Image (cartoon, rainbow, N blue to C red):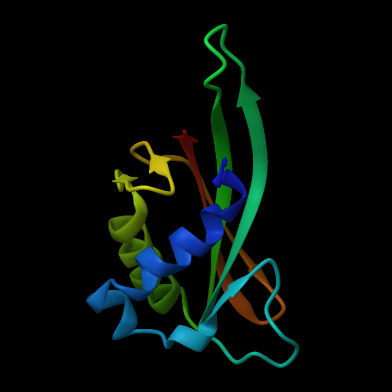
Length: 130
């Protein structure tokens, strides 16, 4: 069975195991798809943004999966410190176990903004999963 749709569960677990990141943010502030109403900053939102299956003639397809990690903070410095720790945790991460093979994760872009009284950093990543 292909578990590429579960990528955000793996990413959330990676983030929760990063000690420096967890000293800056609590586990309940790492949300998938959307943060609950009235979530206080700082917080992180994980979203899978694309999944493309790469079929092969040997019938063992791989999937290219793109996802974003959005960090919202009260100050620019807080947001950047959290974003740097997120990047440290995720970039080049790979995993192979009985359920999934996540090839090294690559950072593909970074975007920052100010929105709804919070500083926003969006990091986009891509990986191949088999």
